[in-house]
Length: 137
Image 1 (cartoon, helix red, strand yellow):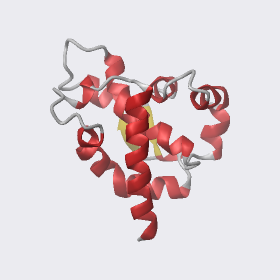
Image 2 (cartoon, one colour):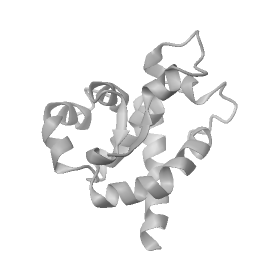
Image 3 (spheres, one colour):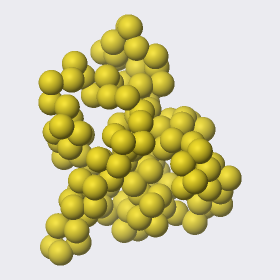
């Protein structure tokens, strides 16, 4: 199993003291939510978190909240083969473009982005574009 990212990698390092540790889940959670909506997750993950995924799809649970329930980890065993291929090739660029995707380049850090459905939708649209380009290659 490969861990692509973990919330604890962030809140155990140079994390802003004034923020809740929950903010370390936001950028990873948005990516996971997109993977769920694109059907790029493993059957095992879908089965293990069926109720949480249904709550996410019904917009009753945000994807960062779902990620927290999944131990704050985005890992290869959570994803399908195609999900892993896209994540391996695109997660680093997602992280470097994250604030740009949200039109928040002036944000103090990636951790200062609020967990809102509006922000998730902005990320989802941009990841859809990135995925389409990746799929054409």
